[in-house]
Amino acid sequence: MSADHRVRRAATQIVNLVLTEDYAYLDALPDAVEIEMVTPLSAVGQALNEGTPHELEQAIRLFLSCALPMEGEMPAGLAAAVTELRFSLTQPSTTRF
Image 1 (cartoon, rainbow, N blue to C red):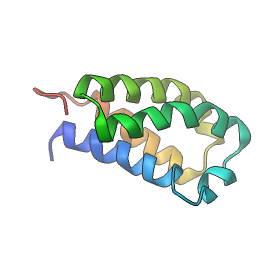
Image 2: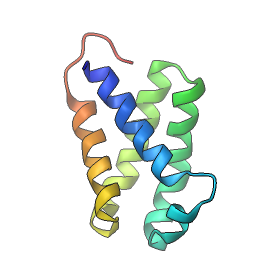
Image 3: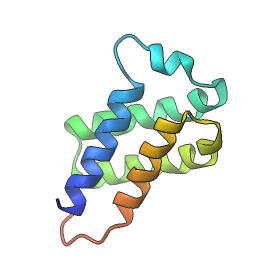
Image 4: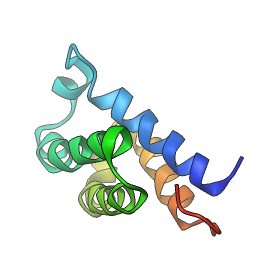
């Protein structure tokens, strides 16, 4: 699997986990995590669906800059997904997304 595919898969996993239609997972997050993550994660979701590769990378980097300081307060599954996204983004790639 290419590095670009891993990044897209990891980003999609987080978007699908947190931004579900019923908001149950989002509402169960600690308030500080929810406040820091919702807007940048929404931008990631939009970039996955409609953005250019550059816009997706920018949205992911913004999301990570907000999410990483909150990692200790996240549920374990979400923290693992954020870590996977971070490591996927740092993998070398000849093309991006």
